[in-house]
Image 1 (cartoon, rainbow, N blue to C red):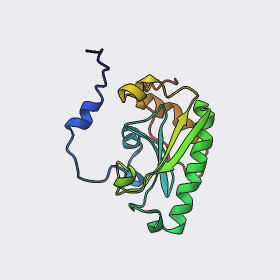
Image 2: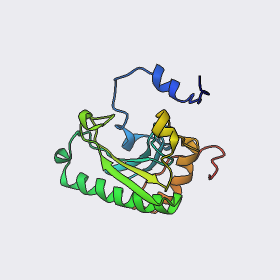
Image 3: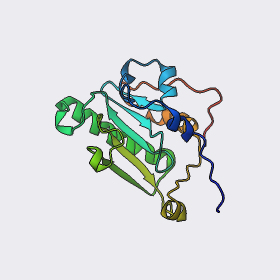
Image 4: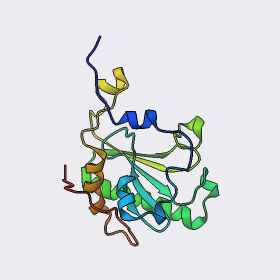
Length: 178
């Protein structure tokens, strides 16, 4: 048998109660300490940026409207513009922060399309580097993320500080850059 790859942070998800309230809702009313705990990088009046708790790559971001809808056509014109303006702004800041060679940007609308949280639409921004798909995901269905999510959030948040109306999470104790 092969060598184990430890991922102890997954146990929290495995044992957690499923269902309940939407993981994306309530951000606009959350205090800065809760933003930090929920891995929010930046909150704006109509949308926010959060780290994906189960990322495909380091610094995998989600851009989420505050409006709880499951389809683009259900967004108001203002929320639609705010969402995609923030997607554009987040790609720019992610390029400056982690220097990817490329980005995957997309939405999975509906469970059949691969949406893990289908009831609240969100956009994915996944930084990519040449050679980042190696034998681990291809043969073992494993992704290697080189930094704790909390440290990644602490590193990325200052790159979003200049967005108009941006609200950032409270700083962590001893948050270090990568």
